[in-house]
Figure 1: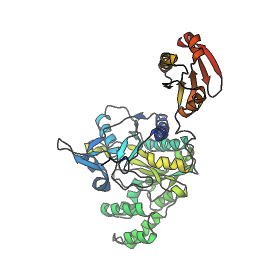
Figure 2: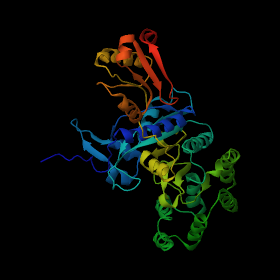
Figure 3: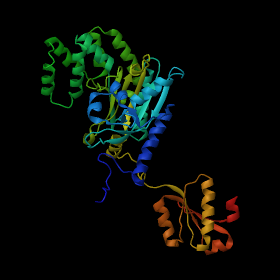
Figure 4: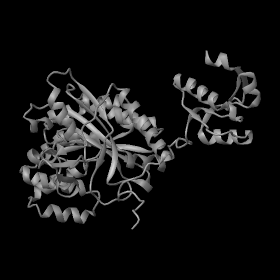
Length: 430
């Protein structure tokens, strides 16, 4: 029986054309992160499952990880996310390093879930994290990084928005203002997370099952109705939570001054599912009705290192997957024309078989100068030279025929300016 030529379900083959597009996207990710001084890091493809059990959601552990027992009887998993790995790495070295730590990575991740638009079993994801920043400066900067990255692709406030909330304020609302237990508050988080995805009647039905009294339900629905940062400030003031209000407004104020509120909106339903978030949480949404979905998520966490018996360390970061980002860029026609095309500096050709050795020599000289060079291995007729050069994405073509062989010269043509010159081989070598 013949082997299947298709890739494993939920994964992709990247032929050179597709890989060039991915490389373009990755280059933008790297530039955006490094422009803020973030440094690249990476970790192992396999981690012990216990690491994910400590800080990942139940759905991921029970349904989505690729796990197995290795030959040393260790229960391990192919990494489904990067945050536990970066926490483990930071826990090793943060005491000796100056703060804040600014790190980024573009890891390959695997999750066993149903493939659909915007979601595959394998993807790559930009992770940007900052650890140990004072006050709320890390939260402000990570939002800057996210906005600058999206803008670097040509996206505007008409194309995307960042919906943001603060988990500390949600905790305060549910547990202090409403007087709920942590257990009930945790269940209410899940309802909030679903509230935009299901009819209002379904939300009411779920809330009724929690056994909250009439006052608690009234407070919950008034919280859910908040639509802006100003609404949230008034809500906290009304309940005499002035310290929380002032702290949050101090965070919002510089965002307003920098013009970031053109992109960032308050949304009471953004809570994100993972327990380790302790500060802001946010998601980048595509505003196009044809692709209205979250393309990125992130938030602030202070207790992530506690699983390693380390003291709390302020951290905030986000993850932006290549699948959702590519869909976004295609939807808004933001992939530059020709980014999938090959690009080289020189195509080296010859029309006389006696020039074979010289073609190798010329190509090697060009490569020694760090040019990208494609050498054609057989005599090529002149009427086929320039179509091939265009197909290869060459900027220059080297031509060597009978005349060039006899006169120890080469012809060099600039395909952009159409200028062509004859160069003595001795001068070219110099």
